[in-house]
Length: 288
Image (cartoon, rainbow, N blue to C red):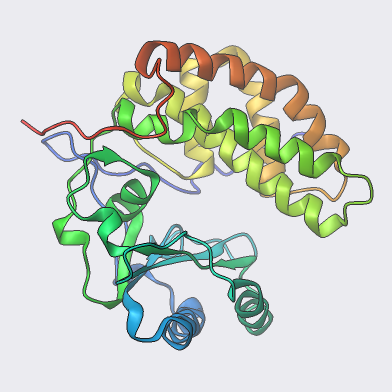
């Protein structure tokens, strides 16, 4: 596979304070003006479709953190609602995504999600939602829950979010990529998605020992390679496919068959040590 040149200055590590806690890396001030209109469109979409049930809206990821790359970054958002239950899916998402991406071609996609506000009230376990909100989100509408959330450490409970899910993630991607006649746009989507997951799982495998935290792709490669130098070439290929996804399903399937199998085995070894019960969420430990 042809290797790509990687800009290791793209992305960064999160700051860890003197208590060993991960600092939230997002703020309204870091949202580039080039994305402001798209952010406003996302707010209006949530308001239009959720109405009085809307509690608050959050922007997360690279745009919220001021490290977006034009033509590579998604506009990732989520809303908390007052309803007791919310399944995370939004039936109107596809139509709104097409409208916003068409009007703002710097974006590769727009993600809408909804969760019950009670899902993050006094959490007892470390969920993906808690990690996303506490480390990389900014409230852009409504009453923010962020000040009330517990601070997190780069520990096994945080690392578990990526690691416990990697085997089903790879299986889902392989199934989607293996479908005969899958259109190129679908292949590109699944290629980018699963390669990002593999990179972040790789960094999470080394998170506890190295005491660092990042979700950015190039730093994920760096963290992984410190712990697994023999796998540098394979993970560099993964990063290449994440940054330059292909319309040919053969390339990502080859990576998932070989390196993906290795990753699942390594994740199992990590889980045997830190999460033998394979819990999706580990307990939130009290902070001393």
